[in-house]
Length: 76
Image 1 (cartoon, rainbow, N blue to C red):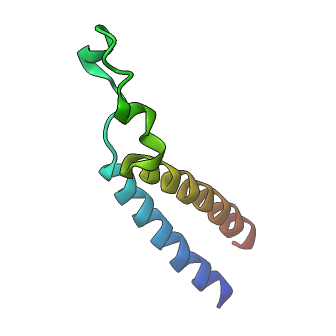
Image 2 (cartoon, helix red, strand yellow):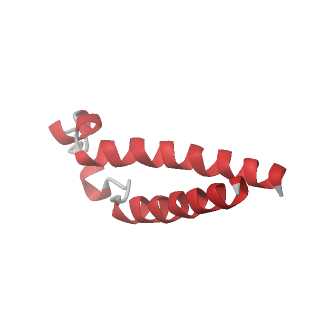
């Protein structure tokens, strides 16, 4: 019973992680980094933006993915 619950939770984390990764923008600065335009207001306040929140959520889901995979490997 516990194994089934962990597997369902693992599936939900996998799908959420895939969706969050697809929602994120690329990290390349493009040609703006050559002219020094990469250091703008949005790059400084990125932790408070939606992109920063997506990055934090990705980290949390990735840790959850690894922990659940480890638990499923031990339980199996």
